[in-house]
Amino acid sequence: MSAHETKVADQIAATLQAYGGQFAVGIPGNDVLETIRACTDRDIRFVLAKSEPSAAFIADAIWQVTERPVALIPALGPGLANAISGLAGALMERTALLVLTGEVATGQADIYTHQVFDHVALAKPVVKYAADLNGARAAQQTAKALDVALAYPAGPAMLNIPADVNRQAAKPVAIPTPPKRPRVGLAAGEAERLLAMIEQAARPLVLIGRGALIGGVPAALQHFVEAHKVPFFASYKAKGTVSDKHPLSLGAIGLSPVVDAVNLRQVEAADLLVLVGFDPIELRDAWLDAWPASQAVISLDWGPLDHRVFPAGEEAFGDLPTLLAQLTPALPQTKPGLIEAVAIHRAELAEIIRPRNPAGAISPAGLFKAVSDRITPDWLLTVDVGAHRILASHVVDCIVPGQMLQSNGLCCMGYAVPAAIGAQLARPDKTVVALVGDGCMLMSLGDLALAAELDLPLVVVVLNDDALSLIKLKQSKMQMAPQAVDFRSPRFADIARGMGGEGVRVDSLAAFEAAFERAVASRRFTVIDAVVDPAEYLEQM
Image (cartoon, rainbow, N blue to C red; front, top):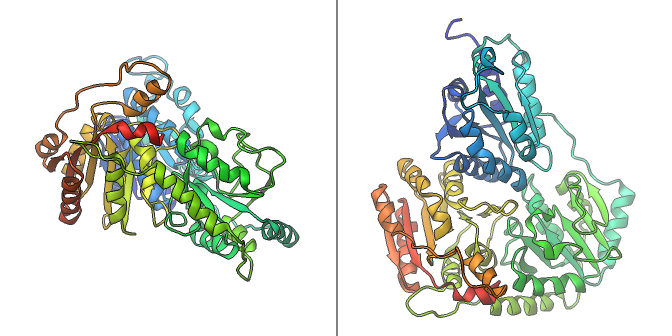
């Protein structure tokens, strides 16, 4: 077979490219080298990660900011095993990944044992589709996997590819392209009926979720909200779908018991709930049965989510921008007292999340407010998992859709720095800031090396308090003594310098603000090691 003949791997890469794929991420083994070669030949950029979970998080962020599927390429055996947390994250974060894992050659199957286990059986619980590749129909099966991955809600799909099959000559075929689907809306009578329900409600409330970020929904949703003059909450991942600074914004919902106790009063007071792409996978258990079955609810989404977390009421599925346009009145409505109620609610929340004034360290809320005060529409933020993320989701105002990336379905630690790498690769013109706790940073040290190696102008802010503060907080509220939560953090600024970046350690808000402004302006990879006092978390969550 000549070097110019098309191989099975080429058909896989060509199909990914036809679906808009521009990136592949992973760590090679000899069984996936042909896959990487084929992607590179198709100008699909391969990013060499430092660990398989981080590779999945890089891919997740690329999907979140581009809505284009990304290939995750783990080698056989330990490569795929290491990637499982990333696959579970992609499933629960609704991320379209095409997982192209290597497998032993067919001539060795069921006999050779080194590094060998059942890849498909391992992956099936955490992907939407997993199967061994049929080499005779590689392009067709790749298109099937991508169709499954992209179908709402999105998620990972895996093809398990024996190394010898990948190298085989492929018969010429037409490369499949994504299916074309019409923009489906409501029948005229149903649209009129649901619009009348919204117009007749005295105190309607909109709940915005992850599904509202995709497919051009934000502009239609802002028009809907402003025409009806209806207040809204957003889930953590949906922050900024309509600006957090909008006068009708009630803030974020999801994980803080203290904040949600206030938020749920607004839900109880509403006489109509309008759910827009509102996926309960982001919510803690206080949202189980959050309203009675008698509550008037209209659920608008791309398709069913098949949950029973709370009553979904009247469900309308289709093209979300079309649905919202059909339910937007021609003339703006007036809802007396709602703007004033929003202001009162926001003042109550502001008191909860206000910065305190610790001695010799930085208030986490003060740090996040300093970031929020400087944010512009061309910024992207990533946050990791823990107390800092919950507080950041309430303090930082997102002003454009998808501005804050986070793991809020699986809530997997070690997300923020690799996600920042993915976001910066996909959007090199943006300012990308990662907000990460020290425990999470210790899981991502290799990613600092990758950021420096790729010369990415990331700003990484480490909130350093020498503890797993969220778990410590929960122990306190359970009247337990702290156990297995305290540790000694290294000097992260020194580590950053050792990896070729800039690093600075700060222990006052003024020093942080100065260092942060310098880092953003420099367009150089910088780690700010910020010594924070976690005491205020107890009152905020």
